[in-house]
Amino acid sequence: MPPDLHDRAGIGDNPGKRGYHPGQRHRGDRVMAAGSPRGLARPIVNVLMYHSIADGPGPTAISPAVFARQMAALARSGCTVVPLGQVADWMRGNGSIPERAVAITFDDGFADFIPAAKLLVGHGFPATMFLVSGCMGGHEAWQGAFTPPRAIMTWADARSLMADGVEFGGHTITHPSLPALEQGELMREIVGSRDAIEAALGVTPSAFAAPYGAVTDAVRGEIANAYDCAVGTVLDRPRGGGDVHDIPRIEMHYFRDAARWEEFLAGRGEVRLRVRQTLRRLRRRLS
Ligand SMILES: [Zn+2]
Image (cartoon, rainbow, N blue to C red):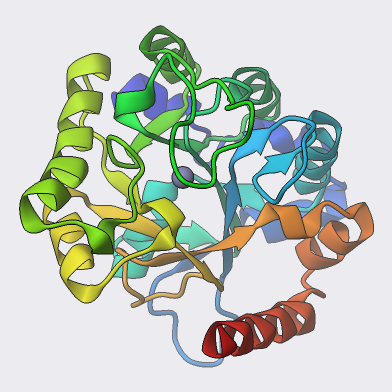
């Protein structure tokens, strides 16, 4: 990211803080170094996962009204929104992270992100969008796509969003399930999407998201060779020392209810998160 965009990404100068209660300000601003001595509170970091911001059925669509409410609550919460790269750096033990930090990510490059991005810019929130490079300017054309398929942004849209401070990551060329591919195809999807983004936007993407969150150790190894970090769909919080090529995320579809989201932001959602993790593991074991 060029330095000017990095500045605009809002590290340490988050216009979203305007609405904070003065009494909360010092907490949101306190910075925790990686590897803090035992006994000090560890930072609470969450990476949010979105897909489409539109009215529609299914877990990959969140309505614009709900999204606006979620972002307004985040701005009021005292959490600091940071770029995904800062989370990865902190996990590696490089640099610090605010005591309560959030990174915002979107998968698939849907065109309905464009108005959503204006809202993010208004709050001063940085965000990362994972692009399916072979679908740019077209429609979703993969397993699980909507009928009718939803529109994907153009490269020109992406360039304009980049000027607004949005960061782009790789999400393959055609959105396949990576573990099913033979080696040549696997490399093409992982490295080819990185190169396509670099060619179109002039910036080498540093982050990757595997379609459907589907990886094996071998797939993750290839991702790690091509990208600095990668997000998964593991429902959890990132931790210092954790795997930066499997950064856990929180599914925002689960937080469409305003009260539930505000409870989570206030740090009271821990029990719910653990219950949901357990249910998810059980379902996986049974399916
Ligand atoms: Zn996807």
